[in-house]
Amino acid sequence: MKLSGIHHITLICSDMERTVKFYTEVLGLVLVKRTVNFDDPSAKHFYFGDERGSPGSLVTFFEYPGGAPGRLGIGVTHHLAFIVEDEEEQRRWRERLVTHGVQVTAMIDRRYFKSIYFRDPDGGIL
Image (cartoon, rainbow, N blue to C red; front, side):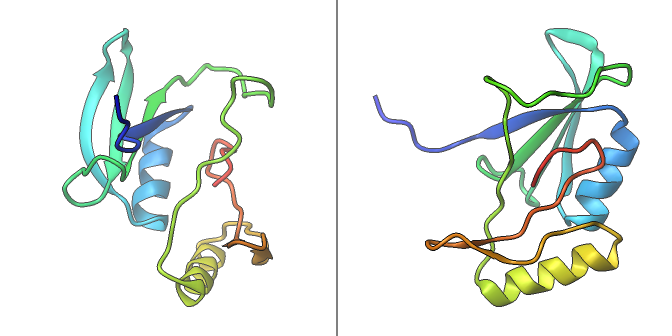
């Protein structure tokens, strides 16, 4: 058996409207699908990705307005990483985030790559 990549990751948000605004207007992703969590039809399930909703580009969210904030621990995703073309594009993204009022770290040299870190409206680390 061979895995060919990641199709999507699903996160939880408290306000889908705010999440849509952040992921589309700030990060430039496309809202490609609106549905419900089929295990809990009371929860919205929205998909964001590239223009075609290609596997590997997708980040999805379940909306739970009354949910408690997450806690760091075993079984919790620490951060979601995006890839950009090069350092110059990463600098432009950092500037874009700052322009949108997002608190973002300076570029950090991780020896094999460079990173910037920021949080989405619910505190998810990106």
